[in-house]
Length: 276
Image 1: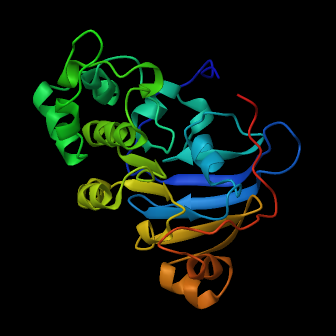
Image 2: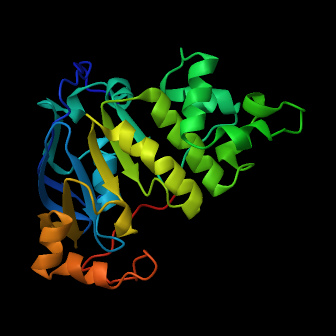
């Protein structure tokens, strides 16, 4: 994707996100997202819920403009994401995903990605909040670089999934962007580590606009609003209590949880991603 010829810098005042009549089908002409309308108010914390393939991650990726819309618009504080520079858009959004992208650089450089001018003290403070500092100190690469100087391999292959996720969370703490997108942000963590990080994550979310995606519904049930997608459409929205009382799809998913995880539930349309 390229910037529009007259692209301007995104200026975030409150972090209001408006998704208007968005259609996106990965070029196939059908499926994935079908006429999505959603407004996230400044500072609101919204959870996206639904079966696998419902379009949750695709919607998050469209807000980040990883793809261009097939129709409709997405604006942040009234500015169309297709008409602002990609660098300024992503500078204002902190992202933690289940498939965290790390680079074959040092741990320090990976954490500083969103804030290149950060001091070592700021990097370490962010790593501590993400419960990453202790394991980072134990690392040593094949060139004998240790701790924050150790290189992590292409895509972070030298780290476990949980370690990669903690580095990504440290990056978000350091970046401190006004908008957060958390896509299965703690899915690779064991329960003790997750509990230790959760308090700091909750603090980080204060005064920010947040979109969170999780199959483990207990991790997002307390958010301001839950938006339920199925078959590429919004089928329900409300608080956890309101949706349980509605006895619709969310209530069924909640009841079918076992140990906090979601049973597989067939969606109307499976989300189709292009081949890698």
